[in-house]
Length: 244
Image (cartoon, rainbow, N blue to C red; front, side, top):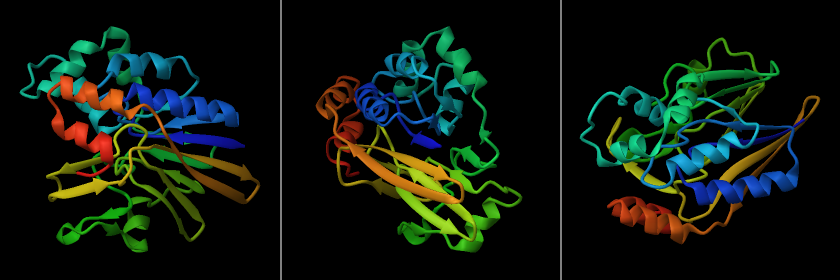
């Protein structure tokens, strides 16, 4: 079985389009989307229609949940209001149906952050503002009682392949947002130091697993211009150079 794994598209239609073209060339059996698909000052509705034009297994991310939670509110976030106004009822209904976790073929378990939280990093340790990798005990604690051999997570926008005991843990990185900063749980920056769209391909043959982290160029300048037009200069910088 060959599986393409995408995550954290964040409404970046141009990046997703090129990633899906690259995936088409590789002819996977499945495409799995780990969430945070539509939120951002870019092209949320066009991104939604592109996702729906493919047979993709999608789960919910924290920003997908935030969109649904704010449908009836006049948010103080101009970007959130922009996203809500750009989407339609079909997009909202799709977001409402997305599960928070998904077991695929009894050996792949997918979620956005951790199995019990879409805002917690499974792999990243942010102590003292320095980003490192959680120790095995911490990661295993998040995965308690999950028997799947392959674990898929997103949220941190950081490509990682980690083996712990008999588990193979994969974060494909971000399709659509190559850097950001955040105040929670403490202030930190996530940076890829490039403007390439990232995803992962895995091939499973019995007990053998082969993984390839893929970086795809796209017309990032269109995304940068869209962010500027929507008064998000921070996003424009993140998209342009992968630095926060």
